[in-house]
Image (tube, rainbow, N blue to C red):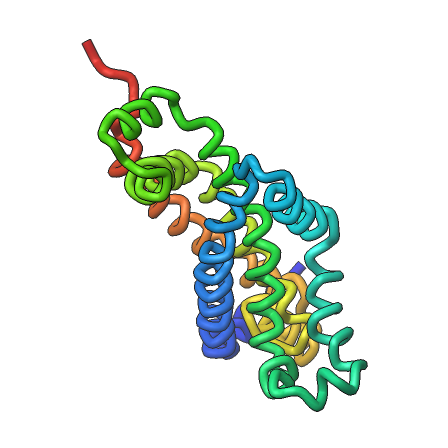
Length: 232
C-alpha cells in the first residue's frame, strides 16, 4: 500500500481553514450553550415543580434525540415553513454557520445544564450554612457562593462535554460547512484518497483534544486544588 501525502501537503491550507471554522463553531456553541445552561441548571434545582419540570423536559428532549436530527430540523426543517422564510430571522436561519452554531449550542446547553445541576445538588451543606450565617440572601448566596463553587467542581465533567462538542462539530460538514471533516471530504472527493484525507483530519482532532485536555487540567489544578488530599 502506497500513501500519497503530497496531496495532503498541497491541501494543507484547506485543512487550516477548516481548523479555523471548527474552532469558531466550538467557541460560539460553548459560549452561548453555557449562558443558557446556567439558568437551566438553576431551574433544575428549583423547588417549584413547574420551573423544575420545564427545565427537565427541555434537557430530556434534547439529550434524548440525536444531534444530527436536531441539526437537520433547524437547517432543513424550518425552511419548509413560509412564515419562517418571510420572517426577520430568515437571513440568519438561511445561514449554515448560524444554524450549526444554534443546533450545537442548544445541544450542549442541555448536557451542561445537567452537569451544573448535579454539581449544585452536591454542594456541601456546610457552605450553605456558612452563607446563611453571614446573612446572605438567597440570590446573593447563589451568586457569590453556590454557583461559583458548583462551576469549579463541574470542571472535570464539563471538560468531557467540551471534548464531545469538538467531535460533534464534525457534523457541520453535512450542512455544507468546510470544517476539518469538510476539508477531508473535499480532498477525498477530488483525489479519491480516503485514508490520507481522513487520517489527516483525525490528527487535527487529536491535537485539538490534547490541547483542550491540558487546558482543563491546568484549570482544575488552579481552581480545584483545595479539594486535593492534603499531604502529611
